[in-house]
Image 1 (tube, rainbow, N blue to C red):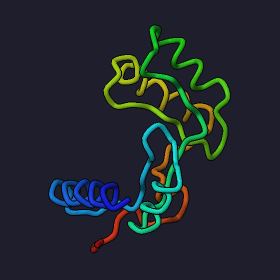
Image 2: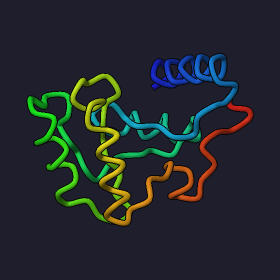
Image 3: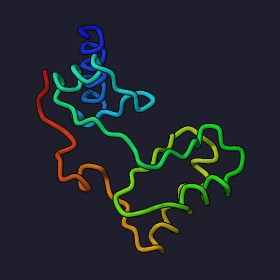
Image 4: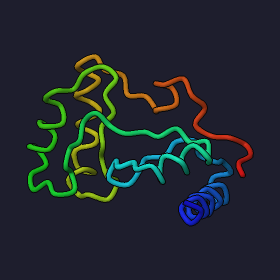
Length: 124
């Protein structure tokens, strides 16, 4: 877990260098947490975040189907997993936000939704 701790610390340092902020949120790769990851998350002082809607956007072949599938069961408090590099994801994002808002949903950052500071000024 020391290797994992140091990897996360290096990542935080790069984020700090780029943004001037240290993150407190952590999304485990693939959403999988094991005892080692959980220990490091705790040692680093992160809040582990997951999602309630998994879109499978990385394998999407049809943008409209992706949009409709994502909106189908949308409810208050959902966290939608989307990836920032998928062509279909990028293509539907504006429509997803607009349609969600038309349905009465407010799009908010995780820190606002959970009432948690997203960043810390100093982290070991």
